Length: 324
Image (cartoon, rainbow, N blue to C red):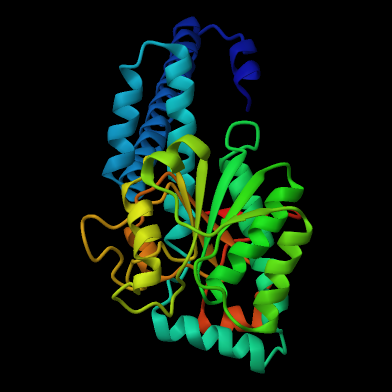
């Protein structure tokens, strides 16, 4: 019998009807109270889950949120939110990516050449192009148009030559410092291409003062993951320039002078603003404290990623680089 029909019953026993009516009112109130309790519990659980998420992301994240709460200026709040969003993405993605030691980095390259039949110039072109794209994202040409590209004797220097060529096509005005050109056809061709594109080169390393007056950005393409200290005499002046300059530095794959696994060997070693890891980040990148860390070289076959468990992030859309 339904609630309505019970209320509708008319008998001589009016007292019983009143009791029944009061019972249903009490039941309804109890049900409403129960519903409120459930809603409160649900909200409490959600809050606890959010708190747990904050703990998982890290104590730094929590401190950042606390700092944001005391910022009164809306513009400053927006800037702080953007910084936190980038750092949150970095925490979420870079913890998954595998950082390679020196032998692993060498083996990946060997497999690319031998198992997948990539050529050196093919990979160098893709790597240098991705470096130019990463630089353009962090240092727009209208503010950082004058670029000194410092190139070393090996593949890292070749990446720098390719990068300089593409930067010129993007509206920058690169100048190449190439203290010890590699006497191989590949590198001679890369240097010649830059020459034919009217990209200037200098024979002497600029002084600290001259560099500060003449350039807006320095690209560090001196040494890669095969570097072993000490720095050779031909490169001491440019390494000292990188260590002492106040200009922003974009390092390709490995900041020059760093150990590929341990990072900085001395307190005076350079601190780049932008690090562009190629293929996969190396162990030294864990010690990077600069503003921007990008991954470039969108050419790693999926089967090779699986073999070395690289866990590389997805490149968005048709991008050639991705921020870590």
